[in-house]
Length: 160
Image: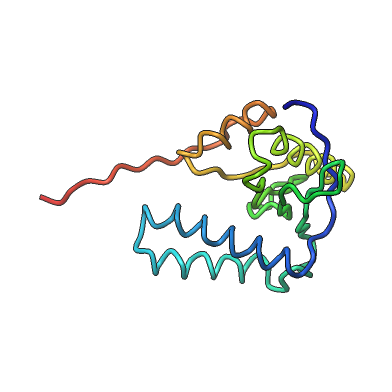
């Protein structure tokens, strides 16, 4: 369904906890393909502590809930400073559409609203990372005009 619109608002404390649990679980799932699960958990926990030292109140970061026209929460996003410190750029750390609202155009709407937010702050670019096998997300970003700026690849080799 094209043409969805969302309004972004700051997450509540409960929404932040839920979003953090979801983001960390998904990140551990992805990283566990590359390292032992406990190492992945540690890396993800350290990342949260590093990038969001004050949680929901971390300066310069927007932890957002997206609501549709009926006021229903349909997803969330985390936008903040570019970790690579690229001049004029912000970073999309996470975007999530809740399962019951997926495949309805809300991903595009949340992304567009996040772009509008950072443009209002004077930013001229929004960067992000995406897991290589997340075909739905890759398609969303391509449809939204995002280009690949780097690519890392890996092949697991069995020791002989």
